Length: 249
Image 1 (tube, helix red, strand yellow):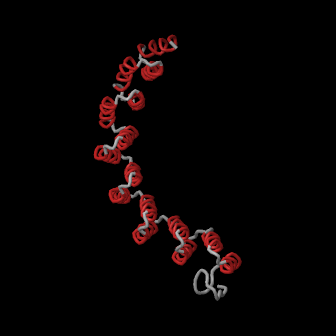
Image 2 (tube, rainbow, N blue to C red):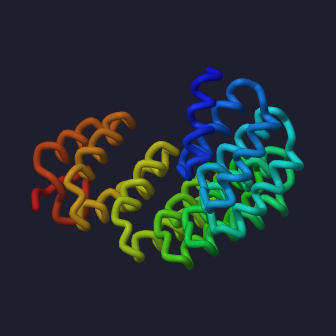
Image 3 (cartoon, one colour):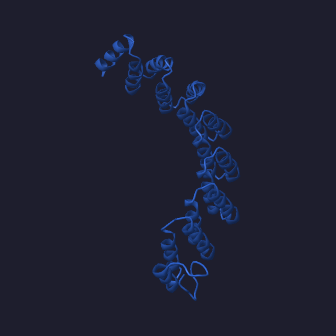
C-alpha cells in the first residue's frame, strides 16, 4: 500500500493531475483521512469534480457533516450537479428540509432538471404530499413530463382519485401515452373497473397494443369471464370496449 501511494505521489509531483485524486483515495482507504483531505484539496483546486465527490463521501463515512457542507458549497460554486444532489439527499435524511430543497433547486438551476422530480419524490416519501405536488409542478414546468404521471400515482396512493386522474390527463395531453395504461391499471387495481375500461380504451386508441389484453385480464380477475373472453377473442364492440350484450365491431 505504501509503495502504491508513493508512486502516485511521484506522479502527482511530476504534474500528473489525476494522480492527486489517487493519492487522496488511497490515503482515505488506509484511514489517513487528514492527509487524504489535503490531497483532495489539491485535486479540487484543479477543478476535479470527482475529487470533491470522493472527499465528501469520505467525510460522510467519518461523520464529519459540517465539513461535508463546506465541500458541498464548493461543489455548488463549480456547478457539480451530482454533488449538489448528494448534498440535498443527505440534508433530507437529516430532516433539514429547507436546506435540502434549496440544494435540489441549485442542482436544477445548474441544468439537472431531474433534481426537481427527485425533490418531489423525497417529499412524497416523507408524507409531505402537498409540498411534493408543488415540486412535481415545477418539474412539469421544466418540461419533465414524467413528473405528471408520478404526481398522479402519488395522489392515487393517497386515495385522491379525482386529482390523480387530472394529473394523468395532463400527462397524456403532454404526450406521455403510457400514462393512459398507468391510470387504467391503477383504477382496475382499486376495483374501479368501469372507469378503468374507459382508460384502457383510450390507451388502445393511442396505439397501446397490449391495452385490450390487460383490460381482459382485469375483467377476468373481477369475475366478468364472458366479457373478458369476448374482449380477448373479438376485441371491442360497437358501443364501447365491452358490454354484456356484446356486438362485434
